[in-house]
Image (cartoon, rainbow, N blue to C red):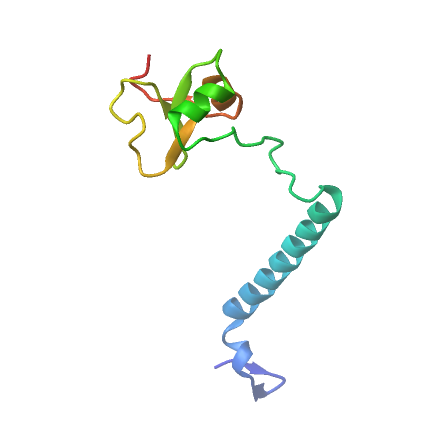
Length: 116
């Protein structure tokens, strides 16, 4: 037990958690201030990375109509990898869609390790 001014105080023996709570509150306040600043500076719906997602299509035919001069790939949206026609995971991952290869490349998607 620690004493403050000759009288025991519960916070005197547990300064670690009390200081931790103060730090947590300060970080939360700065995070809220940053979020408010971003909301003011960026227009509604703008991505913070400056990138927009490639246009995704539920069918291969729709993707071919959108980009007739480009290769259609299957984007696995969970892993950030795309697959080419004829490969094992083309059109068969749980989360994914068809897209144009050039759009996928511009947005940072990468081909699978065994890709063409």
